[in-house]
Image (cartoon, rainbow, N blue to C red; front, side, top):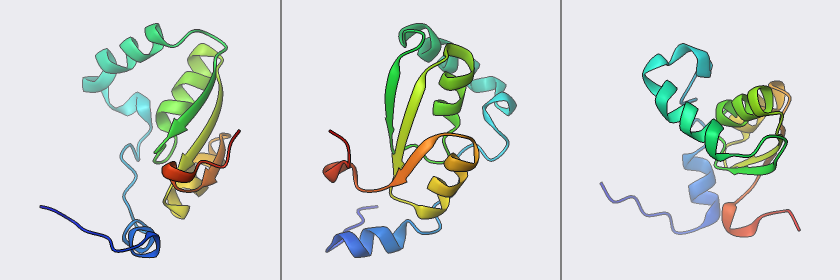
Length: 102
């Protein structure tokens, strides 16, 4: 399926109700543990990270809790950014093509 969005507003509108891809938290998906383990091994402890397309922030939360990382996050969906913030991540709503960081 090829979706086309003529402008950023159309894309943002399409993502207003984008689903949380881990609504039960990362600990509730044992089939993904091997992938999570690889991420934890690859990312150095206490790293400063930017999670682009963070969804509800579960991967960032895992890295924060298990590796002590300082995680900033960005997603296009205001609802998902709100969830990421509720988990204690420094999350902002924005476009990955125009990151609000320097």
